[in-house]
Structure formats: C-alpha cells, structure tokens
Image 1 (cartoon, helix red, strand yellow):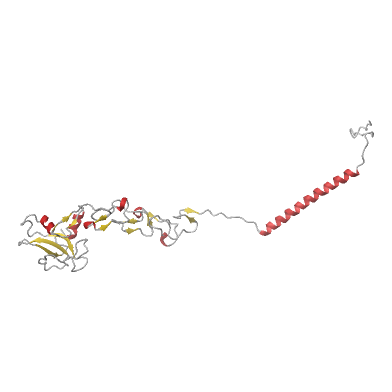
Image 2 (tube, helix red, strand yellow):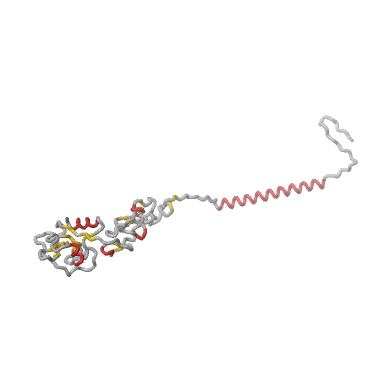
Length: 276
C-alpha cells in the first residue's frame, strides 16, 4: 500500500511507521541472513516537510548517515518517501521513491507514554484543551481520551469554537440577546463579548429588564398643595378659636338662678305650664 495508507494502518493499531532505524532494529526485522531479500518496506523517513532533507516522523535532526541505494528513475512524482530493502549482497539500502508506490511496511510499537505525552519516544505533549484527568490523550496520535474542554473541538481539541457557538463540542449557540456582530460570545461559558441588547441583562443576556416608571408630581403642584393645606389648617384653627370665644362669652352673660325660683317645665305646646 502507499506510504500514507501504511502509516494510517500502523496508527490504527497504536503504532507508527518505523522510527529511527538502528542496527538493533535491523536484526529484529531481518531475522536471518536471507530473510526478505529484495522486499521493500516503508519506514517513517521522508523529506515531505523540507525538500532534500530527510527526517523521521517526529525527529528534530535530519538524517545523513545512511546507505542510499539506487533511486527509482522515470517517476514523475517527487520521491519524498523512503523505503528499505536488503540487496543480494545482504546490505540494507535506503531508497527515495514516490509516496504512491505500493510497498510492504514496518510498524513500530512502543510502550504507553506517561506524563501527558504522546508520539515517537513520547516527545510531544497532550493538548491542554483535552478534558478529563491530566489532559490525557492517545499515546500515539495525541487524540484526547475524554473529549475537549468547553469551547474547543477537533481530534486533539486544537480548534476553538467560532464566535457564534460555545460549550461542549461547540454545540450551543450564543444568545440572540448578545450585542455586537453575530451575537458574539466567549467559547467557554457563552458570556456575551459586547454586552446585551437593550432590555436584557445577565452573563448570557438571558434575563429581561423590568422597567419601573416612577411618577413624580410637578414642583408647582407640590407647592400649591402645601399652600392649600396650610390655608385649610389656619381656617380650621380660626373656626375653633371663634367657637371657643363665643361659648366663653355666653357663659359670662347668662344670669345665675337661685334654687328658690320656680322652674317652668314645658309639657306640650297645648298644655298650660304648671308651677311648682
């Protein structure tokens, strides 16, 4: 199969194409002198990132100390990938060929990485956007084991939600009450970036405002009412004073009657009064 398909096949089993070819690994691959002579195997070496400089999949240093064999001729595509073969002189050769060539392949398995790392020799770090304990990720491809924290998505949780969505897997839309372009909100908690449209409030602008219209009397009306109240109070006070004075005057002018005087009692308008 092609180089790309071979790598996918390795990764599906928790491995990757052979990394960092060594004599120890060669002894494992070619168990006896005459095993696999003439067979071609894909390994992880390639110059796809930088033409002419060959690197293993995750190695930092370019490879120089290898035994290059005869390169394929007459191939139109760039020979960016590398396979190995044992020739009849029992030498292992490295060959640059087009990545579309159909070859066998060698997968390299390694022990599970620790401390939030993955990849060849555990040289890469799991994304801080991976959910779950310790941002755990797959030890080979770095995919997040327990999904992404709110606001991110993608195999390695490397992609942030766009300005219109938020939450787990960017599945929730921002509130239509968010002000600003596209009702933009923050990808993690959905709070509105530019505040709320008129009539709403709250972190996500989910609460409507109850407008309380306060009624105030005009200043002139308050002055008039106060004046009228004062006048009424004065009138009431004067009325009480006049009544008090009248009652006092009547009491002084009325003659005193002795007990010896007769008292007239009116029985009825048609009956003469009797004297006692």
